[in-house]
Image (cartoon, rainbow, N blue to C red):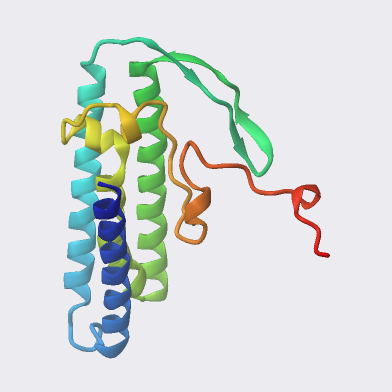
Length: 188
């Protein structure tokens, strides 16, 4: 199972690289495909937002469930959210809000950049990246695909770090803390 997931991520990353490579060799703007790229971008983003709205509706209709212990959340070394206990429904609602705000901010930012600077590459990348992230989300796997919330999908969920591909060994809820300067082995 792990090998299949790892292979799928590699294929996704390679497809994005292929798209970037192709966009440098084909002048989509000069070929008159600017409006097509804009249309596909807004369609893919609309599908993601509609998927999130379906998930929100499913979360609203679920039973509160058992209480979960949620660890504290840190950002840049500061505690953003204290550790506490929430029901499954409250946890899923909070995760949904984070996912929704992340997608909406990305959508607006990319649209402004693309229209202001008249570049298509950010839109081309986002056409595929956002749906890939949606499919990889544990919330989508549980609420849309109907997978059980156990194993890798067990709550509490954490949003993946945007740069997780740079440090894959440090991602995930069971990731070990980064070594400090005092814990390094001394060279002889």
